[in-house]
Length: 448
Ligand code: PA5
Image (cartoon, rainbow, N blue to C red; front, side, top):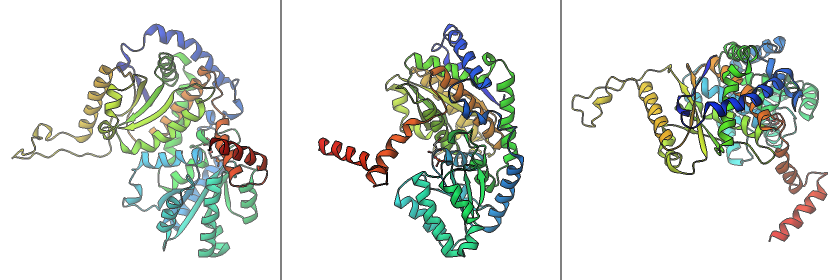
Protein backbone atom coordinates (compact mmCIF):
# COMPACT_ATOMS: atom_id res chain seq x y z
CA UNK A 1 0.00 0.00 0.00
CA UNK A 2 1.33 3.46 -0.88
CA UNK A 3 0.34 4.62 2.62
CA UNK A 4 2.05 2.72 5.44
CA UNK A 5 0.81 2.76 9.00
CA UNK A 6 3.55 3.02 11.63
CA UNK A 7 2.40 2.24 15.16
CA UNK A 8 5.72 2.83 16.95
CA UNK A 9 4.44 5.91 18.73
CA UNK A 10 1.34 4.21 20.10
CA UNK A 11 3.38 2.01 22.43
CA UNK A 12 2.00 2.22 25.93
CA UNK A 13 -1.20 3.91 24.74
CA UNK A 14 -3.02 1.13 22.89
CA UNK A 15 -2.78 -2.56 23.76
CA UNK A 16 -2.92 -5.55 21.44
CA UNK A 17 -5.97 -6.73 23.37
CA UNK A 18 -7.84 -3.46 22.72
CA UNK A 19 -7.03 -3.65 19.03
CA UNK A 20 -8.15 -7.27 18.87
CA UNK A 21 -11.49 -6.44 20.48
CA UNK A 22 -12.10 -3.57 18.08
CA UNK A 23 -11.08 -5.57 14.99
CA UNK A 24 -14.22 -7.63 15.15
CA UNK A 25 -16.40 -4.52 14.81
CA UNK A 26 -14.04 -3.17 12.14
CA UNK A 27 -14.35 -6.35 10.13
CA UNK A 28 -18.16 -6.16 10.17
CA UNK A 29 -18.04 -2.43 9.30
CA UNK A 30 -15.60 -3.04 6.47
CA UNK A 31 -17.95 -5.67 5.04
CA UNK A 32 -20.78 -3.11 5.10
CA UNK A 33 -18.67 -0.87 2.86
CA UNK A 34 -17.61 -3.70 0.55
CA UNK A 35 -21.08 -5.21 0.23
CA UNK A 36 -22.99 -1.94 0.20
CA UNK A 37 -25.26 -3.04 3.02
CA UNK A 38 -24.75 -0.24 5.57
CA UNK A 39 -26.61 3.02 6.20
CA UNK A 40 -26.31 5.50 3.33
CA UNK A 41 -25.28 2.77 0.89
CA UNK A 42 -26.76 4.78 -1.99
CA UNK A 43 -23.64 6.97 -1.65
CA UNK A 44 -20.94 4.36 -2.21
CA UNK A 45 -20.10 5.45 -5.76
CA UNK A 46 -16.63 6.53 -4.61
CA UNK A 47 -15.67 2.90 -3.80
CA UNK A 48 -15.23 1.88 -7.46
CA UNK A 49 -14.77 5.36 -8.88
CA UNK A 50 -10.97 5.10 -9.47
CA UNK A 51 -11.55 2.24 -11.91
CA UNK A 52 -15.15 2.74 -13.01
CA UNK A 53 -15.29 6.43 -13.90
CA UNK A 54 -16.99 7.79 -17.00
CA UNK A 55 -14.17 7.64 -19.60
CA UNK A 56 -15.97 9.91 -22.07
CA UNK A 57 -16.40 12.62 -19.45
CA UNK A 58 -12.81 12.13 -18.27
CA UNK A 59 -11.60 12.89 -21.81
CA UNK A 60 -13.84 15.98 -21.89
CA UNK A 61 -12.33 17.13 -18.59
CA UNK A 62 -8.85 16.96 -20.11
CA UNK A 63 -9.98 18.80 -23.25
CA UNK A 64 -11.75 21.49 -21.22
CA UNK A 65 -8.65 21.91 -19.04
CA UNK A 66 -6.53 22.54 -22.16
CA UNK A 67 -9.08 25.02 -23.51
CA UNK A 68 -9.11 26.87 -20.17
CA UNK A 69 -5.30 26.89 -20.02
CA UNK A 70 -5.19 28.40 -23.51
CA UNK A 71 -7.86 31.02 -23.05
CA UNK A 72 -7.41 32.63 -19.65
CA UNK A 73 -4.94 34.12 -17.20
CA UNK A 74 -7.24 33.60 -14.25
CA UNK A 75 -9.42 30.57 -13.56
CA UNK A 76 -12.04 31.15 -10.86
CA UNK A 77 -13.38 28.03 -9.17
CA UNK A 78 -16.69 28.67 -7.43
CA UNK A 79 -17.89 26.15 -4.84
CA UNK A 80 -18.04 25.40 -1.12
CA UNK A 81 -17.42 22.40 1.18
CA UNK A 82 -17.07 19.21 -0.81
CA UNK A 83 -17.38 21.25 -4.00
CA UNK A 84 -14.24 23.21 -3.14
CA UNK A 85 -11.84 21.69 -0.63
CA UNK A 86 -10.63 18.68 -2.63
CA UNK A 87 -9.50 20.66 -5.67
CA UNK A 88 -7.73 23.27 -3.60
CA UNK A 89 -6.13 20.59 -1.44
CA UNK A 90 -4.84 18.76 -4.52
CA UNK A 91 -3.42 21.85 -6.19
CA UNK A 92 -1.53 22.97 -3.09
CA UNK A 93 -0.44 19.43 -2.19
CA UNK A 94 0.92 18.63 -5.66
CA UNK A 95 2.38 22.06 -6.43
CA UNK A 96 2.61 24.61 -3.65
CA UNK A 97 0.47 26.91 -1.48
CA UNK A 98 2.22 29.60 -3.55
CA UNK A 99 0.99 28.08 -6.84
CA UNK A 100 -0.35 31.43 -8.07
CA UNK A 101 2.93 33.20 -7.39
CA UNK A 102 5.15 30.65 -9.08
CA UNK A 103 6.40 30.93 -12.66
CA UNK A 104 4.16 28.62 -14.69
CA UNK A 105 2.39 28.20 -17.99
CA UNK A 106 -1.00 27.46 -16.44
CA UNK A 107 -3.54 30.10 -15.27
CA UNK A 108 -3.67 31.53 -11.79
CA UNK A 109 -6.44 29.73 -9.90
CA UNK A 110 -8.61 31.49 -7.33
CA UNK A 111 -11.33 29.90 -5.25
CA UNK A 112 -14.51 31.88 -4.63
CA UNK A 113 -18.02 31.17 -3.37
CA UNK A 114 -16.70 29.43 -0.27
CA UNK A 115 -17.65 32.34 2.02
CA UNK A 116 -20.15 35.20 2.15
CA UNK A 117 -17.44 37.76 2.89
CA UNK A 118 -17.74 40.74 0.54
CA UNK A 119 -14.03 41.50 0.96
CA UNK A 120 -13.00 37.99 -0.05
CA UNK A 121 -15.13 38.20 -3.18
CA UNK A 122 -13.97 41.71 -4.00
CA UNK A 123 -10.34 40.59 -3.73
CA UNK A 124 -10.88 37.92 -6.39
CA UNK A 125 -12.76 40.39 -8.59
CA UNK A 126 -9.83 42.81 -8.33
CA UNK A 127 -7.41 40.06 -9.28
CA UNK A 128 -9.47 39.47 -12.44
CA UNK A 129 -9.26 43.09 -13.59
CA UNK A 130 -7.59 43.49 -16.99
CA UNK A 131 -7.05 39.74 -17.32
CA UNK A 132 -8.78 36.98 -19.26
CA UNK A 133 -11.02 34.93 -17.01
CA UNK A 134 -12.69 31.50 -17.11
CA UNK A 135 -15.05 30.20 -14.44
CA UNK A 136 -15.95 26.75 -13.15
CA UNK A 137 -19.01 26.79 -10.91
CA UNK A 138 -19.40 23.59 -8.89
CA UNK A 139 -22.54 22.75 -6.96
CA UNK A 140 -24.18 19.34 -6.76
CA UNK A 141 -27.49 20.73 -5.51
CA UNK A 142 -27.19 23.84 -7.63
CA UNK A 143 -28.88 25.82 -4.87
CA UNK A 144 -26.18 26.48 -2.27
CA UNK A 145 -26.31 30.20 -1.47
CA UNK A 146 -22.59 31.01 -1.31
CA UNK A 147 -21.60 29.67 -4.75
CA UNK A 148 -24.94 30.65 -6.33
CA UNK A 149 -24.56 34.33 -5.38
CA UNK A 150 -20.89 34.33 -6.42
CA UNK A 151 -21.71 32.75 -9.77
CA UNK A 152 -24.37 35.38 -10.43
CA UNK A 153 -21.69 38.06 -9.97
CA UNK A 154 -19.07 36.33 -12.16
CA UNK A 155 -21.60 35.51 -14.87
CA UNK A 156 -22.54 39.18 -15.05
CA UNK A 157 -18.84 40.14 -15.19
CA UNK A 158 -18.09 37.64 -17.99
CA UNK A 159 -21.18 38.58 -20.01
CA UNK A 160 -20.29 42.29 -19.78
CA UNK A 161 -16.70 41.61 -20.77
CA UNK A 162 -17.13 38.97 -23.48
CA UNK A 163 -20.82 39.16 -24.44
CA UNK A 164 -23.23 36.27 -23.96
CA UNK A 165 -21.56 34.13 -26.67
CA UNK A 166 -18.05 34.78 -25.40
CA UNK A 167 -19.05 34.08 -21.80
CA UNK A 168 -20.52 30.73 -22.86
CA UNK A 169 -17.05 29.64 -23.99
CA UNK A 170 -15.60 30.56 -20.60
CA UNK A 171 -18.14 29.16 -18.17
CA UNK A 172 -17.91 25.51 -17.13
CA UNK A 173 -20.49 23.99 -14.83
CA UNK A 174 -20.17 20.92 -12.59
CA UNK A 175 -23.49 19.85 -11.13
CA UNK A 176 -26.12 17.12 -10.94
CA UNK A 177 -26.71 15.12 -14.12
CA UNK A 178 -30.35 16.18 -14.43
CA UNK A 179 -31.69 18.10 -11.44
CA UNK A 180 -31.37 21.51 -9.88
CA UNK A 181 -31.52 25.17 -10.84
CA UNK A 182 -27.91 25.24 -12.00
CA UNK A 183 -28.44 22.33 -14.36
CA UNK A 184 -31.62 23.93 -15.77
CA UNK A 185 -29.88 27.24 -16.19
CA UNK A 186 -26.80 25.69 -17.84
CA UNK A 187 -28.94 23.84 -20.35
CA UNK A 188 -30.74 27.08 -21.20
CA UNK A 189 -27.47 28.97 -21.61
CA UNK A 190 -25.61 26.17 -23.38
CA UNK A 191 -22.69 25.92 -20.94
CA UNK A 192 -20.43 22.88 -21.01
CA UNK A 193 -21.41 20.78 -18.02
CA UNK A 194 -19.78 18.02 -15.99
CA UNK A 195 -21.49 15.63 -13.62
CA UNK A 196 -21.41 15.10 -9.87
CA UNK A 197 -22.58 11.47 -9.79
CA UNK A 198 -25.78 10.76 -7.84
CA UNK A 199 -24.07 8.16 -5.69
CA UNK A 200 -21.14 10.33 -4.54
CA UNK A 201 -21.54 12.93 -1.80
CA UNK A 202 -19.65 16.24 -1.88
CA UNK A 203 -16.88 15.30 0.52
CA UNK A 204 -16.15 12.08 -1.40
CA UNK A 205 -16.19 13.81 -4.80
CA UNK A 206 -12.64 15.09 -5.34
CA UNK A 207 -11.85 12.39 -7.90
CA UNK A 208 -14.93 13.24 -9.99
CA UNK A 209 -15.17 16.27 -12.29
CA UNK A 210 -15.64 18.32 -9.09
CA UNK A 211 -11.94 18.09 -8.35
CA UNK A 212 -10.47 16.81 -11.59
CA UNK A 213 -11.25 19.80 -13.82
CA UNK A 214 -9.56 22.44 -11.61
CA UNK A 215 -6.74 20.02 -10.81
CA UNK A 216 -6.11 19.36 -14.51
CA UNK A 217 -6.17 23.11 -15.24
CA UNK A 218 -3.30 23.45 -12.75
CA UNK A 219 -1.32 21.06 -14.97
CA UNK A 220 -1.38 18.19 -12.48
CA UNK A 221 -1.27 14.62 -13.79
CA UNK A 222 -4.81 13.38 -13.09
CA UNK A 223 -4.00 9.95 -14.59
CA UNK A 224 -1.39 9.45 -11.86
CA UNK A 225 -3.88 10.67 -9.26
CA UNK A 226 -6.50 8.14 -10.36
CA UNK A 227 -3.84 5.41 -10.43
CA UNK A 228 -2.84 6.21 -6.84
CA UNK A 229 -6.47 5.91 -5.76
CA UNK A 230 -6.99 2.74 -7.83
CA UNK A 231 -3.95 1.04 -6.26
CA UNK A 232 -5.13 1.76 -2.71
CA UNK A 233 -8.65 0.65 -3.69
CA UNK A 234 -7.20 -2.65 -4.86
CA UNK A 235 -5.40 -3.07 -1.52
CA UNK A 236 -8.48 -2.14 0.48
CA UNK A 237 -10.80 -4.46 -1.40
CA UNK A 238 -8.52 -7.44 -1.92
CA UNK A 239 -6.84 -7.80 1.48
CA UNK A 240 -8.77 -9.12 4.47
CA UNK A 241 -10.16 -6.19 6.46
CA UNK A 242 -8.06 -6.99 9.52
CA UNK A 243 -4.77 -6.74 7.63
CA UNK A 244 -5.58 -3.56 5.77
CA UNK A 245 -3.86 -0.37 6.97
CA UNK A 246 -6.87 1.86 6.21
CA UNK A 247 -9.07 -0.36 8.39
CA UNK A 248 -6.33 -0.54 11.01
CA UNK A 249 -6.27 3.28 11.10
CA UNK A 250 -10.06 3.25 11.67
CA UNK A 251 -9.53 0.72 14.48
CA UNK A 252 -6.85 2.80 16.19
CA UNK A 253 -8.95 6.00 16.15
CA UNK A 254 -11.87 4.00 17.50
CA UNK A 255 -9.79 2.54 20.36
CA UNK A 256 -8.32 5.94 21.21
CA UNK A 257 -11.76 7.60 21.14
CA UNK A 258 -13.11 4.99 23.54
CA UNK A 259 -10.19 5.77 25.87
CA UNK A 260 -11.14 9.45 26.12
CA UNK A 261 -9.04 10.86 23.31
CA UNK A 262 -11.75 13.01 21.80
CA UNK A 263 -9.64 15.16 19.48
CA UNK A 264 -7.66 13.93 16.51
CA UNK A 265 -5.04 16.31 15.17
CA UNK A 266 -3.82 15.72 11.63
CA UNK A 267 -0.18 16.79 11.55
CA UNK A 268 2.00 17.55 8.55
CA UNK A 269 5.44 19.10 8.35
CA UNK A 270 4.66 20.68 4.97
CA UNK A 271 2.56 23.83 4.49
CA UNK A 272 1.53 22.32 1.16
CA UNK A 273 -0.59 19.85 3.13
CA UNK A 274 -2.60 22.52 4.99
CA UNK A 275 -5.56 22.45 2.59
CA UNK A 276 -5.35 18.67 2.46
CA UNK A 277 -5.95 18.78 6.20
CA UNK A 278 -8.97 21.03 5.62
CA UNK A 279 -10.34 18.44 3.17
CA UNK A 280 -9.67 15.69 5.73
CA UNK A 281 -11.43 17.69 8.46
CA UNK A 282 -14.57 17.98 6.35
CA UNK A 283 -14.43 14.29 5.45
CA UNK A 284 -14.29 13.12 9.07
CA UNK A 285 -16.23 15.96 10.70
CA UNK A 286 -19.19 15.77 8.36
CA UNK A 287 -19.18 11.98 8.11
CA UNK A 288 -18.93 11.17 11.82
CA UNK A 289 -20.07 14.20 13.81
CA UNK A 290 -23.59 12.98 14.57
CA UNK A 291 -25.73 11.69 17.46
CA UNK A 292 -23.64 13.70 19.97
CA UNK A 293 -20.50 11.65 19.34
CA UNK A 294 -17.29 11.36 17.28
CA UNK A 295 -13.74 12.58 17.35
CA UNK A 296 -13.28 16.29 16.68
CA UNK A 297 -10.95 16.56 13.67
CA UNK A 298 -8.39 19.35 13.83
CA UNK A 299 -5.03 20.00 12.20
CA UNK A 300 -1.66 21.67 12.57
CA UNK A 301 1.35 22.33 10.38
CA UNK A 302 4.63 21.71 12.18
CA UNK A 303 7.13 23.01 12.96
CA UNK A 304 5.18 26.29 12.40
CA UNK A 305 2.46 25.48 14.93
CA UNK A 306 4.89 24.02 17.45
CA UNK A 307 5.52 27.70 18.18
CA UNK A 308 1.83 28.40 18.81
CA UNK A 309 -0.21 25.28 19.66
CA UNK A 310 2.82 23.18 20.60
CA UNK A 311 2.57 24.18 24.26
CA UNK A 312 -1.05 23.05 24.48
CA UNK A 313 -0.38 19.76 22.76
CA UNK A 314 2.55 19.04 25.07
CA UNK A 315 0.87 19.98 28.35
CA UNK A 316 -2.80 20.92 27.94
CA UNK A 317 -5.87 18.67 28.37
CA UNK A 318 -4.87 15.06 27.68
CA UNK A 319 -7.80 14.43 25.36
CA UNK A 320 -6.04 14.32 22.02
CA UNK A 321 -4.02 12.14 19.75
CA UNK A 322 -2.13 12.96 16.57
CA UNK A 323 -2.10 11.40 13.11
CA UNK A 324 1.13 12.41 11.44
CA UNK A 325 1.72 12.48 7.68
CA UNK A 326 5.37 11.58 7.23
CA UNK A 327 6.53 12.54 3.73
CA UNK A 328 9.72 10.57 3.42
CA UNK A 329 11.26 12.50 0.54
CA UNK A 330 11.00 16.02 -0.83
CA UNK A 331 11.20 17.10 -4.47
CA UNK A 332 13.25 20.11 -3.39
CA UNK A 333 16.77 20.03 -2.03
CA UNK A 334 18.04 22.78 0.23
CA UNK A 335 21.36 22.31 1.98
CA UNK A 336 22.35 24.39 5.01
CA UNK A 337 25.52 26.32 4.04
CA UNK A 338 28.73 26.30 6.04
CA UNK A 339 29.85 29.59 7.61
CA UNK A 340 33.60 29.66 8.36
CA UNK A 341 32.96 32.17 11.17
CA UNK A 342 29.99 30.21 12.58
CA UNK A 343 28.68 33.44 14.08
CA UNK A 344 25.17 32.01 14.50
CA UNK A 345 26.55 28.73 15.91
CA UNK A 346 24.70 26.71 13.29
CA UNK A 347 27.61 24.83 11.76
CA UNK A 348 26.37 21.64 13.41
CA UNK A 349 23.72 21.77 10.66
CA UNK A 350 26.10 22.70 7.82
CA UNK A 351 25.85 20.32 4.87
CA UNK A 352 22.59 18.86 6.13
CA UNK A 353 19.59 18.66 3.82
CA UNK A 354 16.67 20.71 5.18
CA UNK A 355 14.16 17.94 4.56
CA UNK A 356 16.22 15.67 6.83
CA UNK A 357 16.29 18.37 9.48
CA UNK A 358 12.49 18.65 9.12
CA UNK A 359 12.08 14.90 9.60
CA UNK A 360 14.40 15.01 12.60
CA UNK A 361 12.14 17.73 14.04
CA UNK A 362 9.28 15.27 13.46
CA UNK A 363 11.00 12.45 15.36
CA UNK A 364 11.90 14.84 18.17
CA UNK A 365 8.28 15.98 18.39
CA UNK A 366 6.87 12.47 18.27
CA UNK A 367 9.07 11.53 21.24
CA UNK A 368 8.22 14.71 23.15
CA UNK A 369 4.49 14.37 22.58
CA UNK A 370 4.59 10.71 23.57
CA UNK A 371 6.32 11.79 26.80
CA UNK A 372 3.57 14.35 27.28
CA UNK A 373 0.91 11.66 27.03
CA UNK A 374 -0.12 12.16 23.39
CA UNK A 375 -0.40 8.99 21.29
CA UNK A 376 0.73 9.30 17.67
CA UNK A 377 -0.33 7.35 14.60
CA UNK A 378 2.19 7.83 11.78
CA UNK A 379 1.23 7.45 8.13
CA UNK A 380 4.28 7.10 5.92
CA UNK A 381 3.96 8.55 2.42
CA UNK A 382 6.86 8.44 -0.04
CA UNK A 383 6.35 11.95 -1.41
CA UNK A 384 3.92 14.72 -2.25
CA UNK A 385 2.76 14.15 -5.79
CA UNK A 386 -0.41 13.39 -7.74
CA UNK A 387 -0.09 9.61 -7.26
CA UNK A 388 0.20 9.91 -3.49
CA UNK A 389 -2.57 12.50 -3.30
CA UNK A 390 -4.90 9.98 -4.96
CA UNK A 391 -3.62 7.27 -2.62
CA UNK A 392 -4.23 9.36 0.49
CA UNK A 393 -7.71 10.37 -0.68
CA UNK A 394 -8.80 6.77 -1.12
CA UNK A 395 -7.08 5.64 2.09
CA UNK A 396 -8.88 8.26 4.17
CA UNK A 397 -12.23 7.82 2.41
CA UNK A 398 -12.22 4.06 2.96
CA UNK A 399 -11.09 4.43 6.57
CA UNK A 400 -13.73 7.10 7.16
CA UNK A 401 -16.57 4.92 5.92
CA UNK A 402 -15.38 2.00 8.09
CA UNK A 403 -14.83 4.29 11.06
CA UNK A 404 -18.30 5.84 10.70
CA UNK A 405 -19.94 2.42 10.72
CA UNK A 406 -17.85 1.41 13.73
CA UNK A 407 -19.18 4.48 15.50
CA UNK A 408 -22.74 3.57 14.55
CA UNK A 409 -23.52 6.58 12.35
CA UNK A 410 -24.38 6.99 8.68
CA UNK A 411 -21.09 8.31 7.25
CA UNK A 412 -22.74 9.60 4.09
CA UNK A 413 -25.34 12.11 5.21
CA UNK A 414 -25.02 15.59 6.75
CA UNK A 415 -28.42 16.52 8.22
CA UNK A 416 -26.86 19.04 10.62
CA UNK A 417 -25.66 21.29 7.80
CA UNK A 418 -29.27 22.33 7.11
CA UNK A 419 -29.88 24.01 10.49
CA UNK A 420 -28.01 27.25 9.76
CA UNK A 421 -29.33 27.36 6.20
CA UNK A 422 -32.94 27.20 7.37
CA UNK A 423 -32.39 30.06 9.81
CA UNK A 424 -30.43 32.11 7.27
CA UNK A 425 -33.09 31.72 4.58
CA UNK A 426 -35.80 32.72 7.07
CA UNK A 427 -33.90 35.77 8.32
CA UNK A 428 -33.10 36.86 4.76
CA UNK A 429 -36.77 36.60 3.79
CA UNK A 430 -36.65 33.67 1.36
CA UNK A 431 -40.21 32.85 0.23
CA UNK A 432 -41.61 29.81 2.03
CA UNK A 433 -39.77 30.49 5.30
CA UNK A 434 -42.23 33.05 6.79
CA UNK A 435 -43.35 30.87 9.73
CA UNK A 436 -39.79 29.98 10.64
CA UNK A 437 -38.84 33.66 10.51
CA UNK A 438 -41.65 34.51 12.95
CA UNK A 439 -40.45 31.68 15.23
CA UNK A 440 -36.85 32.96 15.18
CA UNK A 441 -37.91 36.55 15.82
CA UNK A 442 -39.88 35.46 18.90
CA UNK A 443 -36.83 33.55 20.10
CA UNK A 444 -34.48 36.50 19.52
CA UNK A 445 -36.85 38.90 21.30
CA UNK A 446 -37.05 36.54 24.27
CA UNK A 447 -33.23 36.39 24.38
CA UNK A 448 -33.07 40.18 24.46
O1 PA5 B 1 -20.06 17.29 1.48
C1 PA5 B 1 -21.08 17.89 1.25
O2 PA5 B 1 -22.11 17.32 0.88
C2 PA5 B 1 -21.15 19.40 1.41
O3 PA5 B 1 -19.97 19.92 1.90
C3 PA5 B 1 -21.42 20.03 0.06
O4 PA5 B 1 -20.40 19.66 -0.83
C4 PA5 B 1 -21.50 21.55 0.17
O5 PA5 B 1 -22.50 21.90 1.11
C5 PA5 B 1 -21.81 22.17 -1.16
O6 PA5 B 1 -22.99 21.64 -1.67
P1 PA5 B 1 -23.32 21.77 -3.20
O7 PA5 B 1 -22.29 21.06 -3.98
O8 PA5 B 1 -24.68 21.15 -3.35
O9 PA5 B 1 -23.36 23.26 -3.52
